[in-house]
Image (cartoon, rainbow, N blue to C red; front, top):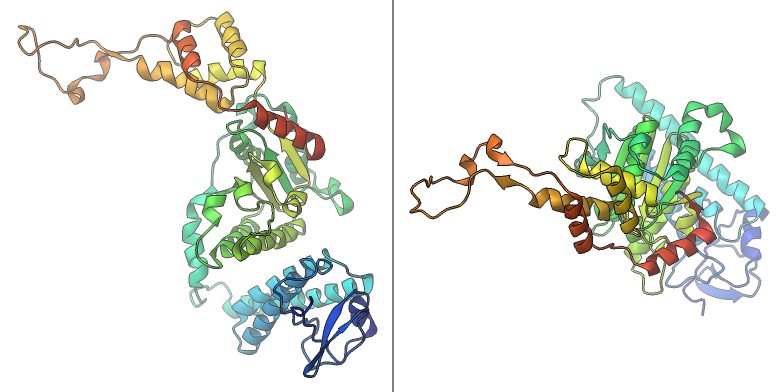
Length: 463
């Protein structure tokens, strides 16, 4: 049953290091050329290996080991690479791999069965990697000074920079004032994002600001718009990506993309990373899940753990199906805000907003109220479609079509008609009601019930 696990124990480990494994129910210990299964793992001497090295040959790990083994393996793999690059004086690569090793090992500390002594040991090892990375960073800075011309250009990083060049939105020009309704969501975001930047002294120690916020709700309710407004209000760099931007069919590319986006945010801090449709990236784990999908989730968890130690980066994510998120990912978002369908007052404002201040119309204040009453369960996106219909079909030309034989006929193409020869009739209440009758609400009642159920269990209202 456990033939797929091999623990190679180092012969000079101290008692604290052995203690963790001796507490496990079943361990397969490799001693020399023999493998022995112990009901209570005994201290067994193996060949010398780097500290914390656990050689795990994993097809299927027992449940008690959980994801911890993967994190430790990954951390040690990065540490081995870092050590080799360091010895060969490839300091830039060594620096990156030391940091990755520390991130993975610290993540292992938070998962699985681990006593306090082992946690202390792991923390010390991670700190040693971080300290060496800091030494290398200072060394590189002293070596290069202000001249970066001799720096080796990492082709992988250059490719990623080109891929995500359009993800940085320099000026969103959208404020909370432009967001109709959603007062509770705006207040929650102000508390979670803006106040920590404005009053950092109030958010130290156990009162640290949120590292991750999840916006969820039906499609077309303004989650992306609200995220842009948040970036504007706190004057932060806004990095906007979707799951489609991060996913790749090539092996390892998705994890690299996730890692790069987080690195970019740390470089540009204060920064907000907005990930749209995060459910496509971090869906619930299943028995049939591919190895690639599992690695993406693991990478995302590692990067989120790094964000918690960095006050300058906030992860904002949006999803239409929050119940489809992996539970470990969901827990990374301490704040989960429901973005519901607009209420009647918000719908009334949206009809006015989408028609525009300069549009010609004959609608009265009472007409706006009637439209808001007749559009129950419409999302903001649905209302935008309704308003576009009468505007798109209402233009008429002052030229009348006629037969070629008409004595007053003038042959013209559409391009030859002048702008002042176009007549735009005003939008009427009849036009709006006609559009409302053809454009139905796209959100189903079953979806709304699921969102309400999720909110009762995990989230908070944002309307």
